Amino acid sequence: MIKPKCLKKGDRIGFISPSYWLDEKDLKRTAAYFQERGYEINIGSSNSLRSGPFAGTPQQRADDIHQMFSDPNIDAIICARGGYGANRVLPLLDYDHIRNHPKIFMGYSDITGYLTSITQKTGLVTFHGPMLASYKKRLVNYNFDLMEKVLGGEPSVYIEPPELLPVRVLKSGTAVGPLWGGNMTLLINLLGTKDSLNTNGVILFLEDLDEYLYAFERILVHMRTAGMFENIKGLIIGELDEFKDNDIPFGRDTDEIVLDICGDLNIPIVSNFPCGHGTYQTTLPISIPVELDANGQKPNIKLLESAVETNS
Image 1 (cartoon, rainbow, N blue to C red):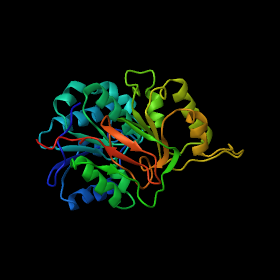
Image 2 (cartoon, rainbow, N blue to C red):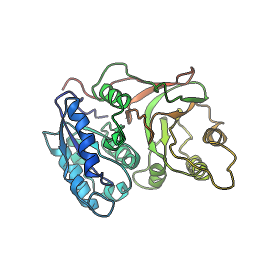
Image 3 (cartoon, rainbow, N blue to C red):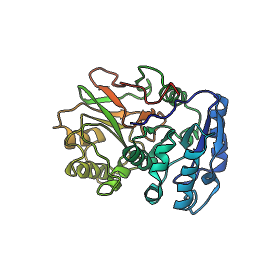
Image 4 (cartoon, rainbow, N blue to C red):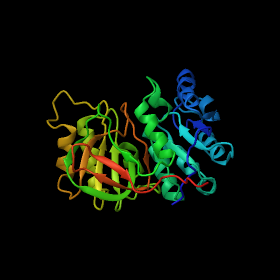
């Protein structure tokens, strides 16, 4: 495990668009939030490139990632947005180069592909957390404050949901294990490839956006039959934003679907956790050991060690 250097006030954050591009007005306005909080910013070259919805060609996006990792003046890398396109970039990444220049790398959605692949192939801890697109409507203090705690290396960080987002306990219990996961569609797309996620012994978190209920069940069934749930220690279902039904009702909500497919597993299961496409987004360090406490009314995740190096 390689831990990146912690994030401090005055550090320079590089913003990249390794999948879709973010509208220039939104890019500048949301990046300014980081300046207001005391960070310097650097806008990567991919943000100004256009190839349809993509921020440049796959090679141009890979080049921007490499440039950000190699630039000694960049202390952390945060993605502007997700979308689609990581699958074209992953084969072009120089993982040795990334391993030799470790630093914070954070995003979610399509960025799941980058997070799981980088961490599995290099040992570098990456972060599933808010991007610039997370603040298109407004700055969300819950997201930003928790990000600073995790990336800043505060000791004994508890990741608790905000009062306005009630997390539901589907199966109670406590579990300990390394934290892995991300967007369900991305994880399914990586199955059978060199970038498939190894879920053995992990606490797995899953989220997605704008899916039909039948498609949500189909993904869970696929994951179950592919063996992704066989040896997990706990299951966290994120906020499933903008899910919908067909004209003929599916007859079960998302919690009922989860219990139907995974209810026989002897593990704690929670749902509606703030990781995903909703307003509230936690910063979850990929591969760091955590404790999932799903025994009370407010399920939480405790980081069992710092996700960053605080002595460098």
